[in-house]
Image 1: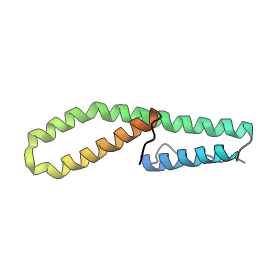
Image 2: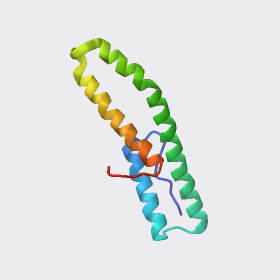
Image 3: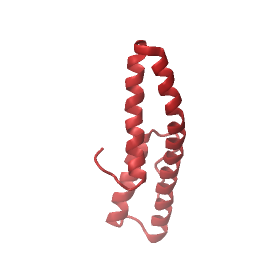
Image 4: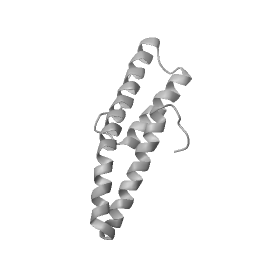
Length: 103
């Protein structure tokens, strides 16, 4: 019996891990055609969820970056963390466009 091992509350990293497992299992022929369809639908749901979250985050980034800029050097650590988050979002965007690149 096919089990869906991912929930919408999972982190980006967990979602990526699940997508990797799905791809590997599909390539290895682990599922029946009916189960394959179900697992592909799960993968599509994961991609759609993170695509929406990426779009939402992209809308917030300019505002956050401008606020940080106004706050000055006292919040350098926050700016660095946001920059790392932006890099993760760019990585997700590349993956969603089909350019997996290095992670």
